[in-house]
Image 1: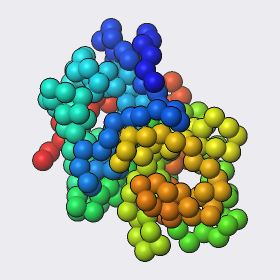
Image 2 (image 1 turned 45 degrees about the vertical axis):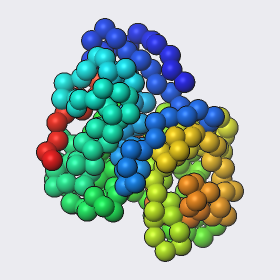
Image 3 (image 1 turned 120 degrees about the horizontal axis):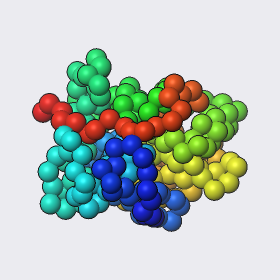
Image 4 (image 1 turned 180 degrees about the horizontal axis):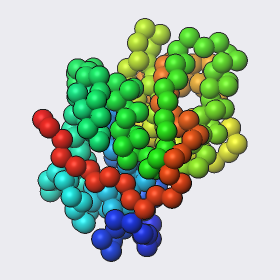
Length: 238
């Protein structure tokens, strides 16, 4: 869903508000290992109207944005920038980061750094929760906590996989009910409801993966309440 709105901050006079709800279709990840990067790129689109407009239309072009003649090319180019940050020695803002092989996808600590760098509202703090070995009661509490902390529109990431290893990353968004979430799956671009019982019973069926492993979620704390802008995309070293 797209709606044009006037906003403050670094909009250069043009802004496109980007929203995703269950039933919508968003961008699709552009490589087999960039599910996490795609989620983080979409997360930035949701909080930065200028960035969303650039991805979709090419205008206005934020400082440091890569080239690309089509929306898919611009999305793919920014996915690569995100992966260089999340998997490299330096995360967003030149903060030290534990490197991780790109062939293994996005590490949760790199995803957390990227969310705090501007893929969520400026000043929002994130943490990593391990869900894999939680019993039913623990998963119920984890899910309900996730519902609460994304309620104001802050995104979260969920790592899912088999009983052996995490294999895929999806973006978690507020749902339309008290105990329901929406989830964007970058493999298909689809946004669907995520029910609590599907998580607890480990039958999530997200691109064929059922087991919840990790959540990269807001802590509920924010040091900056009003967001005038998010950091420009910025160039990243190859």
